[in-house]
Image (cartoon, rainbow, N blue to C red):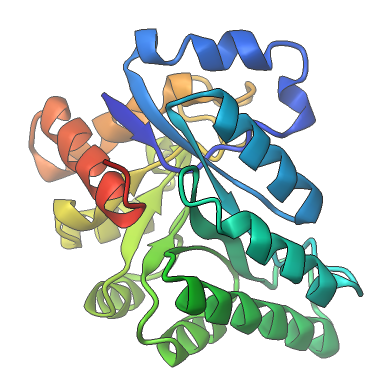
Length: 256
């Protein structure tokens, strides 16, 4: 069974068929799903979904693009939500996103929010799910400041050199449908270099559907394509990738 370690079923693109789709997952070889939040509202929502489906788990946090002026108060509530030990398994998704944010002051706030959530993860002994877009150096710097925190860099887009540093720090690397695209050389080089025991698969649904589904709404039904792509790079059976990446996700997120 596969573990989709990052999918956003609180997105409104699932409003018409969310229950039907999620209910179909166990019959389609998807045994576990982790749904990260992006703000306070979605943190509440993903916890409620996780309580409804036994195979669905939640992460709570503030995405770097979704902070607001009340983020410190929001984080107090998120801290309470994070203490649902049965279904909340991480702080996320958190991190830095410089793709849209060009203002140094805005970037400084993103860094403050990121540090505050890393500190929360450290306090609660929870792993983190890190979003890093066009902010590799700053993300790595802040990650290193919290030596007791472990987690995963989702949709990893960094270099082989950065991957080596994160692996040394005890982090996992997770990959989306991007690795099935023709221009995925950098990510495939990282997969080739990293041990399978430190890799995970994800869809980031409803975004970034893999080939041959590119352009469609993504869902965990397509997570098998990432396992196939990793198996091809590693020269191992797809079943081996399924087994090991699922074990990796369960280990990081402390799921029995």
